[in-house]
Length: 238
Image (cartoon, rainbow, N blue to C red):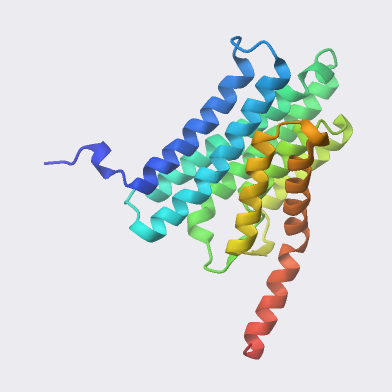
């Protein structure tokens, strides 16, 4: 007798599903009419994506502690597609909708950039479990990519800069660049900055999101160099 599909789920899988639900709510907030304040709607949508990122990190911790199910890897990838690829792409498009509303060329440019981001994101997440390494990430991690384009659009950088940012960050996800995996201290700092970004909102000139953005961009730039340094130390026997 076949098992019930629901019985295949582990605790880690339930957290992955929570990640997907956060992504869904993020998209829903962009189109809901229940909240009249557009800035509040953007902040709630922004916050749900960040909560999804926290859930994405938590499901891995729980899976390592309690074990994962046979469908865990597939479920996590599907959840990440929702929260780390589709939701941020829609967020960026809606965030700049007033700027591109009456300009067909800007619409085309932004759609092209976001299609490339989605393409690279899908390729990365589909191949992640095949190419994953124990101590490194191959390609810029999707959570880092998501945070960068999400915050850049949240603080509304100039339209001319968001286009190359989306394309470059998307391409970096599917690149062969190798990044050292963040340690527990780096992850803890990122989690604290995520909570600050969610709960302080846009007070103090976006201090939370900007600090988080600086931290993630620093990792994106120096991650490959850190990996090379660690590799050299390992070869020398340190």
